[in-house]
Length: 186
Image (cartoon, one colour):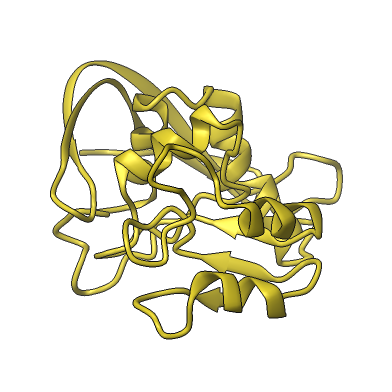
């Protein structure tokens, strides 16, 4: 996994060194080292990296997710492979907060629910080569989060301070641990 930040190095230089199965995190970040061009396209070297099997992970964190970049990527048919929050001490109070907030942001910009859930469950498990995670197949861990899709007006903010009011969000409703259900209490 490679964490991309301010250059140097340039995103193009990092992607050129990556191999199939490697993970680029912070992949929908704003300028500099953004994956999009000024005219609303995805850089050719980013498209080439996807063709070569590089895995693209969100890694929202404090400074690595832009609504504008995400919208541009989705408009070009480029969804993230993995959605992660990269929550740490500097972003737990915002803008990332938690994984459900990061997932909800993608719902708010138009990524289908089934794609959002896959990108936060089965896809990261596959990237980590942990087939027993992110699935309900027989023999799997038997752990799951039970989510509720809520409707309303929900305020979201990205890493550059842009705000978005979404009409849906995901909320925790329960957990299943080792096949046993437990309700979430507020």
